[in-house]
Image (cartoon, rainbow, N blue to C red; front, side):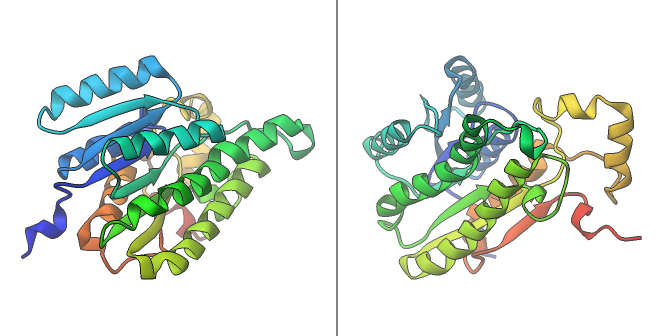
Length: 257
């Protein structure tokens, strides 16, 4: 077996939303495969703490952090300038996201536009900005962190669902358009994952029971389980996989009566 297919030694990955939850778990996963990391998050203190913790765990890896808001285009351009200053890029993980759950008629324009900027436009623009760096290598990869809400209705609000559905279609289109350039583009679609963001809804016992009843594996997922799927899609072992979406959902999307 060619063990190099299961390693990322010598590769550099940019991860957005990397200071906690799924993003931090992805960072730890890619470090375990040997990658060096460029981490981006809005909260400078949380990012610094995450970087320090990871550096203690992986002292032989290069780990850098930049506090920036991916919803702001000036910040997005600054991120890619920073990436180029650190020598380029092999992998891009568009993980940053956010949501405000309201009935459709209750969103202000600023609210719904802000969700689009964070969840969708940031991934599109960062992918485009990263394109010249990614094409410097024979094989590069982009992984977008979507949601099952982009595939079916999950009470997350229409705006969140729209952004995640568009993210899936963006993944498919870029995969086809950029395949000849050596860039694979894939995505993952988590269901409920145990993070700080989901702790509120899941603290409602009745709602928790409803979620579990619709999940064949009868439990909430862990950030590390999403990270494992992202890690696989980054690896050379996934070299013939592009345009795909891996649901990390405990069977939720396949549920039947």
